[in-house]
Length: 183
Image 1: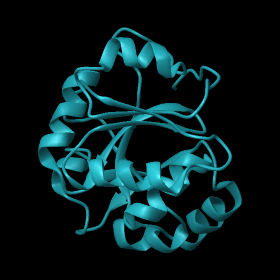
Image 2: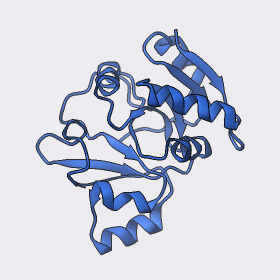
Image 3: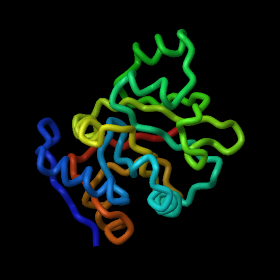
């Protein structure tokens, strides 16, 4: 049975953010809001949590996982980015975009695209996601919460609770988000 937190969309409660980060640091899988729908997240180095996420989403090893980063300063540690791409990132972030780059040696191999050795990088604009990243003090491994057979990210935390309550450790209710079709 997972925990279920109601977080204020514009002013997340510090106590709940700290508790959510404790769940992440202890190997938990968290459902949290982003600016493009709800996502599944775990600590960057947690292999078991990543396996649980892959099982929930029913994704293969060639899936591009993303690292949710706090800001551009974390970028060069995990991705090889040239000046032109950096300028584009600076212009488009924070926001609902995931950029795919060649991964550095700091990225665990299991997070990289198996063939291309790439990683998705994202800087969210959602206040709750940013609060989690600030408290975590490192990027979070993440993937959009799109259930098998669906085309859209999940947007209703109550529905997410109904379908994933026994498969994740924490669901953060950060409001009802508009459905977004993933490309």
